[in-house]
Structures are given as C-alpha cells and as structure tokens.
Amino acid sequence: MAAGAELFRRNGYAGTGLKQIVAEANAPFGSLYHFFPGGKEQLGEEVIRTSGLAYIQLFDLFIAPAEDLVSGIEAFFAAGIATLEATGYVEGCPIATVALEVAATNEPLRQATADVFTAWIEAGTEKFTKFGLGREAARTLTITAVNNLEGAFVLCRSLRDTEAMAVAGAATVDVARRLLAEHG
Image (cartoon, rainbow, N blue to C red; front, side):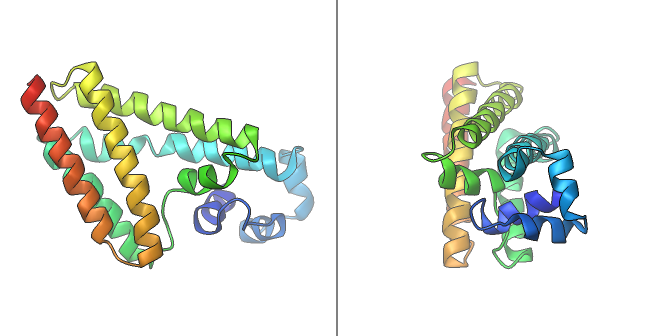
C-alpha cells in the first residue's frame, strides 16, 4: 500500500499503473490481486483511507503541542513549504490529487476521499476547540485550513514556487486570529 500511496501522490490515480505499483513495491504481480481482489480500485480506496487518516496525525504533530493556535498553524504551513522544497514540488496531498481526478467518474473512490476530508474536518474541529474556539468557529477554521492547504499544494506544484503556501498560511492565521478575537 505504501508504494501505491507514493505513486498516487506523485502521479495521481489515473497516472499510476498496476505494474508501476507492483514494481515499486518489489512484489510479484499476483500478490496485488491476492491482497486486493478488486484490483486497482480496491487498492486505491484502501490507500486513500489509510494514508488519509494518517494525515490526521499532522494535527497532533503541529497543532496540539503548539503554545498557541497561531504558532501551530504557522508551523503546519511551514512544514508544507519544507515538504514541497525537499521533494522538488513532487509531493503534495494524495487525497486531493485523487479527489480531483475521480469526483465525477468513480463513486467508491469519491466516497473514500469524502470520508477522509470529513475525518480531517472532525479532527481539526476537535483540536481547535482546545484553544478556546467554539465548535462552529473551530469547524470554520478547519475548513479554511484544509481549503487553503489543498489549494496551495495545487498552485505550488504547478508553479514550482512556495509563495502560494506562504500566502495560504498567512490567510489561515488571519482567520484564526479573527475567530479567536470573536470567541476568545
């Protein structure tokens, strides 16, 4: 599954072939169908759900230990910049990459991406309430952060520049400060 996640993140779902996945995993071709009898679609769904839920840990890595909400958000977006630069703008979010491809063409994969985004919104809402925001404000901030992060990944990867991620982080911080002032 790790090989599939890596390839989907780089090439997208449609741009990744089964032979590539098996080669990257150093596995016999038949093993793919042994573990994923539904083929690429089943593997894709498992990769989306597993790697998507792993990304929830980013809240624990950057937001939860922060002294305050603003510094946590700044660290979160700075990590996005570092990832883009370290990977030559190849890596972004595998969930968004696949979601854009399959939203109108593959209902099981669309549902898997929707479930992951829903889990992120719920997790972020929970984490942000610990900084004094009410549930509605925390949800608004979470959706803002996810929107800004995902959009920034698309722009940064296309432009090969991190300006969009820096702008997205600053915009998310502005929303956080406003919501904290209104609800704090």
